[in-house]
Image 1 (cartoon, rainbow, N blue to C red):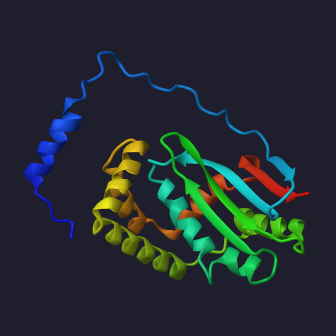
Image 2: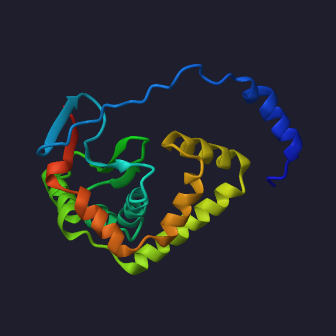
Image 3: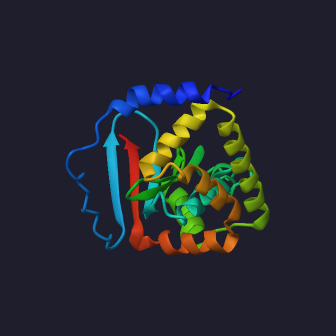
Length: 219
């Protein structure tokens, strides 16, 4: 139900975490970041076993940035089953077994990843050509899809708030990004994001010069 004794809980926090002393000195702040990528990259891993796979990653902003929610929404819009553009173009057309996409939001700049699982009969060059075209050129999005995606996010957030365990995990992830309040700010940003903002972010980051393509090729 989420009901708990607030006074008792705060006393437990004070009796455990409250005993941890503050650092005596100033905490170190990381100061190194990846250099800006100059040109696309491609890597292939060949070994026995498994099924063919392709994954393409694009550098993105830190997970705490307001722009980052645009990537979260974009990934769901593109990969939703059965009507997401990537699903329709690759899975329904027989170019891939399955597709996926997700942003890796971190404290520092992260990466957004899209990929496909293939089988031995698939033309991997054709699968990549279609995925590349959809991501870097066509970017087929609609207002109707955005509204459905916002509803999905709202329902997920509501379910999380009703589960103490899920809420705890969500707060932990937000703290890792830099501030526990991001859990609630990102929910608001997601509902406020516009189709134009999503397209702008996608056009800014889903670029050939910002991409790394990876293959897993059983041999």
